[in-house]
Length: 260
Image 1 (cartoon, rainbow, N blue to C red):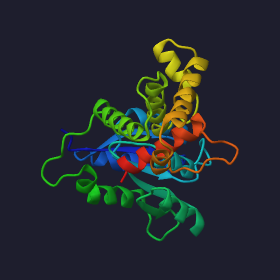
Image 2 (image 1 turned 120 degrees about the vertical axis):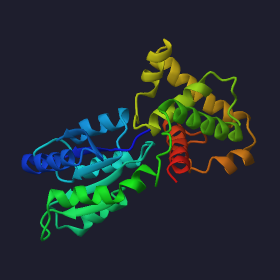
Image 3 (image 1 turned 135 degrees about the vertical axis):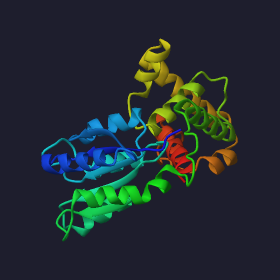
């Protein structure tokens, strides 16, 4: 059971970072400092492997690596449980940039140039919305474990494959399930290599098995059933989707189901 908010800071300005850390530690009865990064890539790797309730994100990261919009875009295309509350800090006066941040999932925005801005304002906001972020009024609910979430994802994908008519007898069936989950977790390439390394098979063998399972489905399933359940457009010169097209289609279905 948790009653503290785990806060991740992604900030390249040393003074701002120091001030935010000090404010978090000043409220250590309610807040817990998860980590501080100047790199959006390092932040993403941390978020994949740890529970983060809130992120304070500098959009520009001129003194670090990557940028805040890139991190928002990647988080928006992943299944993360719980979904972190994201506060954006920015020096940018551009409405286009700031609207893009909101479209990509930012929950709140502070302009560093606005009158009266201070890191303390950011922390005070988190303290105000903390009960909603943690999802409780009196007692927080038990969090969904990573193992349980992956099982739920697997069940959903298998249900969708069964609707389409993908045969479980094809060895590529399970590989495709794993590939969709990898894609939903932000791994958008090298599925064959990752799956092969896990089960002791060659990358080519896994990749071939996945495409064979797709080809076999299109060769044997009812065309009306395919058109009903696989709604992605196919290239005019291709009757059957490629592995990439197939996996990304079901990745989006998975994201829509779990992030709604």
